[in-house]
Length: 64
Figure 1 (cartoon, helix red, strand yellow):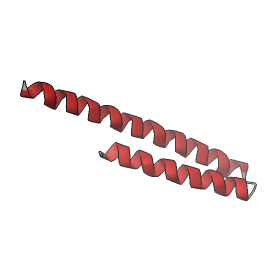
Figure 2 (tube, one colour; figure 1 turned 60 degrees about the vertical axis):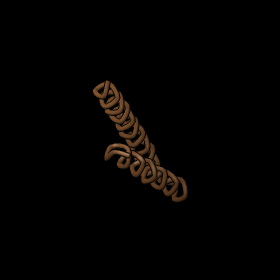
Figure 3 (cartoon, one colour; figure 1 turned 90 degrees about the vertical axis):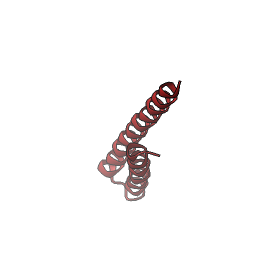
């Protein structure tokens, strides 16, 4: 797991917590912020996945 993947996963958890807290307290702003954080986290994690894939492909092809 690279740095982007771990940060992305953390942001998703943080975003879900904010979203649920916003729902619980009827705070639409907090709920929206949580959704945004969760979305950013998914993007970061996806970017990290792509980096891993490129790294594996490069390392595999350099051995040939």
